[in-house]
Length: 291
Ligand SMILES: [Fe+2]
Ligand SMILES: [Fe+2]
Image (cartoon, rainbow, N blue to C red; front, side):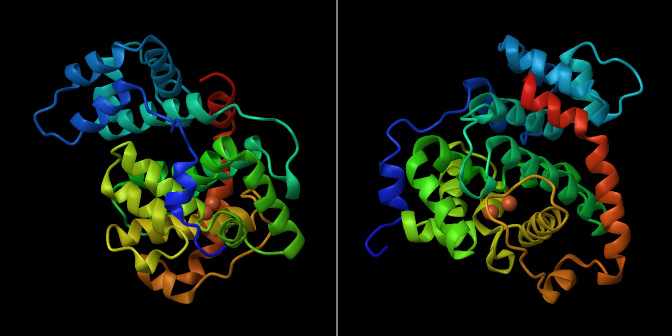
């Protein structure tokens, strides 16, 4: 719709979602080499529900610890700062957006299906990172998890218009992103990027959110954006969760070159992702139910 833009859309969100101060603080300190494990655990311990969530997630089968982790300092030492930051961010995001309306939405969209799509994408991105020799697999995981953050913002804050976008996508067999462009004059990638900036998330995460549909245009972290882009397509193809439309995007051949994975490896990659996806059922249920 001409004249509309990201500014028009975000100006309609009168009270944008915030992250807890504790999580914002963590985001600021984890990249500082002077930060210690005890300092990180001290910050988390100021928030009792976050402390519980972190310890629950650390001890979930998903992280495969051989022994029970009982203190935050232990958790921080064993998992590392980035993982702890990501767990805290995951817990905070599920706290903010985990619930939501359970009412049926057009095209079979639901909040539960959305999170299943997001978690699956996180798992697939982490798996692909391993194949692509991308060292920061944890960064790949969190990038996959929040790549579609903008959708949940549109759903939560501009619900009726988001419903219209889903309807349009279903009726016209167009991608949800194109339908959003028609209704809002912007899309979930831009809206998610806006929120990630407000939350002071690292530049690489902002870039992945903004460019997950066109990773070659990403100035920052193009390989990470490409991994998430491919993960997004794979989980749609495999029917893990529901992204808001039913189209199956074609994989651009250049993508394989960009991430340095041989296309022939695809069957074994799909098997691997399927296995990890089933292993993560507990994680999916836990973050959706308890955290
Ligand atoms: Fe998307
Ligand atoms: Fe997606």
